[in-house]
Amino acid sequence: MFRRVLVANRGEIARRVMRTCRRLDIHTIAIFSDADAGAAHVAEADEAVRVGGAPPADSYLNIRAVISAALESGAEAVHPGYGFLAENSDFARAVTDAGLTWIGPDPETIDLMGDKINARNFMHGVGVPVAPGTPSPLRDADAVARAAGDLGFPLMVKASGGGGGIGMGIANDDEELARVFATTQSRAERFFGSGDILLERLIRPARHVEVQILGRVDGTVVALGDRDCSVQRRHQKVLEESPSPGITDRLRERMFAAAVAAGEAVRYKGAGTIECLVDPEAQEFYFLEMNTRLQVEHPVTEMTTHVDLVEEQLRVASGEEASVSATPAPDGHAIEARVYAEDPQRFLPSPGEISVWEEPNGSGIRIDAAYRAGDTVTPFYDPLLAKVCVSAADRNAALDRLHSTLEDFKIVGPKTNIPFLIEALATPQFAQGRYDTGLVDLLR
Image 1 (cartoon, helix red, strand yellow):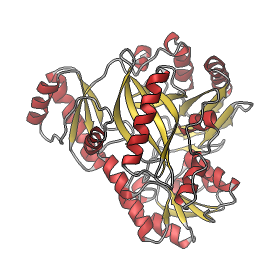
Image 2 (cartoon, helix red, strand yellow):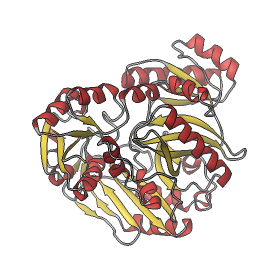
Image 3 (spheres, one colour):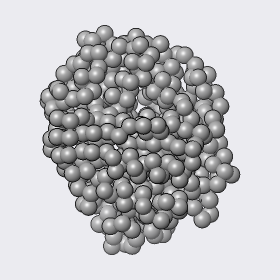
Image 4 (cartoon, one colour):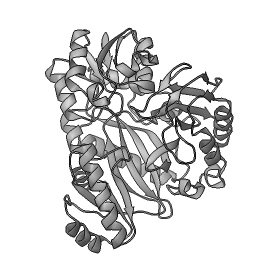
């Protein structure tokens, strides 16, 4: 196992990774920007290194600065968390080229799965179901119109190199398609450096269900359960739960088998996720994408399997065999709510100083937080404040626990989306487990 690990991230995910490192007696090294000099993840690390100015491009996305920090601090390995450089194959190569260990899958796997079109084609080739879509990139409006004529509406318009819900739009007719294509391509060029576009038949209604996988040193892959991530605003997840209440045991078995086959086909190492769209009526599933990193919503899997995914990542990256060799039966039910500093009506960021921060605690409650009282939420980074995660013996008990936990979470300063989360939990659709990706639209 490693002795010194640099965590190339910030906020709640940096604190979460360091928590496992501390338990394993691993020396942790944080990085920080000028805006984060007094942040919680910096205070909790064994040591910390400044990597640049407040804008991410000057700090957390600055590969040269992060590698320099790792070398100067004597780190043996780099954990990227999620977001920022976590799925950047150039960063992964830079880590290994510097003689350090990359805690994640091989750069070649990141490259293959980082392009949605290549990933779709690869998965189709190994027998994983994919929705009807375009097998090659589209770059101009005429080509998009012709492809739409073959596929039919409604369509999902996606940036081929996108991820995390960025660079996606829905088109129901030709006029809307032209507008959505122009917007999506513009965002794709801005955020991902490529205007390549993919069209995919929209499954509606649909549930967004993913399978957590763990690639072992011996080349085998284990499915560690599923998560339902259907409650989304602007294609960004806000409520997740495990196991999904919207799939049958038979479909779950098929999804697990496909996820294992997909992981083994790409020689996956460590923790990753196979994301799928599920047709709830037909009980069929279609591959969406593979996330070659730890997911934001990983706590619900940890709470129902009692597997520390960060520890497993560290084990595999260090050459030790993972402690899990078979799919564990879920123990109870877990739900996660993402608490953001944002206007709960318009979902717009709400930066500002936090004057009061009082976290609830108790049995079955886990809060992965990015902030404390006195901290300032700046406009430079994602406004995620904390993940409120609960577990209980069954789904109804978990719902009750999450509702009361959210009500007891006191944050004064920036506006938060807690009122929206409580409203979503109270809907008959969510309470009864009958929701789909359109739930937020019903509330707004």
